[in-house]
Length: 351
Image 1 (cartoon, rainbow, N blue to C red):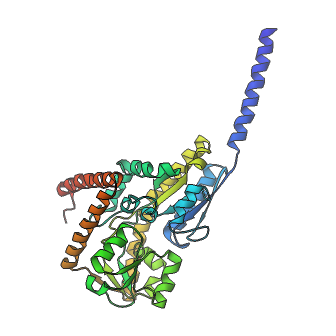
Image 2: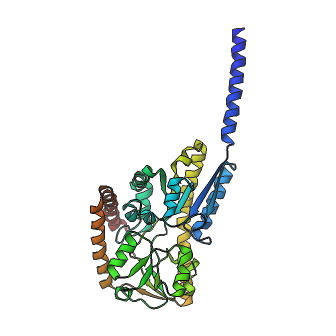
Image 3: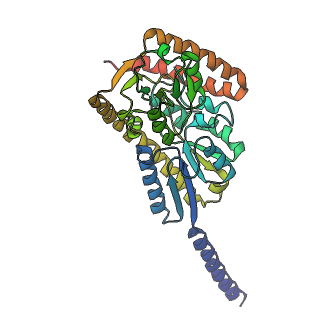
């Protein structure tokens, strides 16, 4: 009799546990993801594809709504919004978070640092980069992940010719905050203005800006800059291997069941590699479009590059002395760069 009672009890217990498990699995999580991207850009298109795949893989249990720049918030407030839980996820550029800690200003690609996408990719996917970024974001309740790599930015686009650093003195230039703008201002004497995407084109048309830096060839073309800026000077020395990032509210992430956490992280990894590859092919096509439109492209002179290098080294030293963590981050990046350069001196391109 005791055995029969125990068997019934166990069957009831298993049934009850099954109901709890089904209830947990069917729980619905609605998230908002504020992007820094314009709505027609490749990274935003792929972001929507990523969230569609997450809904499919989770059977609708994790529903993330991605919105383009400025819909919920924008600029540096994306970081604050994720920190405060106003949004569950954000996507932008690490240097935009530099108001929270100076190390964010050098987390991204800096002048004469990682000169190729793969060097930065190695650092953040297989090296110390993501660990260091999370060490920085964790006290703010944020999980950090690399989003994708645009690589070398396009340069400066302008309505009037800019043939070198001397032509930039006193000019108003749109460029992201942190290390990129500091180096450009120090090298050229230009005034740097960190406008978000929707503000850039109107400011250039009105004359409030003299030149614009906005991501890569595809990003600049997508923003319509080819129509209003017939001159360009390249390359974008300030950000040679730029990367975008994801910010995830840690409390929201920890509230997800383990399978949804795994789905989200796997989807992010897929987005990272797919968007990086697709965007670079779009850059090839966009450069052809700029050339077909007649954009006049100039390169920095060797003398200008020497000035860029000298000013960059001065500002890097200021960051190294600003706090121990920033110095540690730059040391780790430099260590990988040395190993990368040594390897490719042996196994580099033969052409």
